[in-house]
Length: 279
Image (cartoon, rainbow, N blue to C red):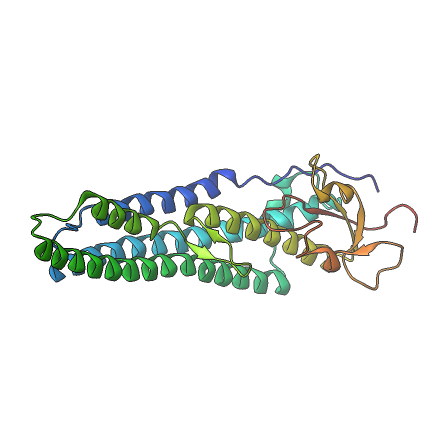
């Protein structure tokens, strides 16, 4: 069967919507922190700031959950549609959309990806809130000590250098949305961007594979993007969608999650095919 050219999915608009949500939230949190009077940090002021920060993060969580509920099913639907077209069931994605039915595997996939993505996004805001609370306590204690010192030294105000240092501490508290397993610190919006790009690509691929297997197609061709990293060695190659399919092809499961291809932020997908040349 002739390999069909399937349009690449593009979720850039959706991803930027979510990233913008986090950027705006971080900006609002910084504005709250900048309102703190560091020369005389009162408990009431601190509690009000923490309450406002929590409200901003709650709003982010609500909006990001809506985003996940909207976008992930669309991504999985696109993966199913691309498979239906690639296997020649219909000619266009528009026709495919009309006959899509989620099989058992793709129903379970949708639920799992929605849950996992929401959990991962929630971890970002939880980390921000924890860091902000910890930093405010630290800054409050340092401000108190500085006030004691100014009385001892006969000064009337905390020095500008101390205030600048305290402001920097507060600003850095929202700089890290998450620390990954490798110990790398990610800015919240950068981590969210990487996370949802990886999740959408992975969900699209899983939906594609599930639909292909349900239609007895056991091979796929890796997409081409003109990659310059290690991915370039795999572009256009045939892979097995199940490990026991015949032929001298690598199993896709052994490639995923590594560094050579299908890594975080990777754009490569798989287009299913029934019988590759050479079998």
